[in-house]
Image (cartoon, rainbow, N blue to C red; front, top):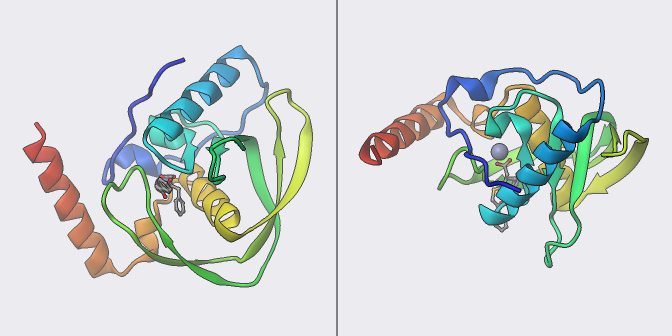
Amino acid sequence: MALLSILHYPDPRLHKVAQPIDAVDDAVRQLAADMAETMYAAPGVGLAATQVDRHIRLIVVDVSEDKDRLMTLINPVIVDKDGETVHEEGCLSVPGIYDKVTRAERIRVRARHLDGREFEMEADGLLAVCIQHEIDHLNGKVFVEYLSRLKQQRIRAKLLKQAKEAM
Ligand code: K1U
Ligand code: ZN
């Protein structure tokens, strides 16, 4: 397995729309394993392939306390949603920035397992928030885009300054 490097906002590659996965092969399984390792090491509770510069529809999520409930979702689609919840979000691609985002409270998701089988699941709480956040990544959307234009400008300037200082 390998640790992958994570793109940081405002990298334009974070806005690419990911392509559906036609066949779940060894390359996809390897990428999923590397993404899980990268998510746990960060540490984070989710990661989308977009964030590691792979533009295919693959996400990994684990919101459990003991980090023993890894979920890998291929071609995830929200087929039903209801309610509204406001949750403080973070993002491994926007380090050090946390802010409140309004999303659906409960979702029903259709996806494929790593063995190619299709499944549906229901989610609420942090799991629902995290899956919506990761699917946004696959659609080229970063959570800061839910914030005001002024906040987005400040975040962009702060992260560009940090990136310059790290060079
Ligand atoms: O997509 C990502 O960048 C991962 C992101 C997922 C997420 C977190 C919170 C709300 C919505 C989506 C993160 O994992 S940020 C880090 C984080 O939340 C965390 C880190 C360590 C322990 C617990 C949480
Ligand atoms: Zn994120």
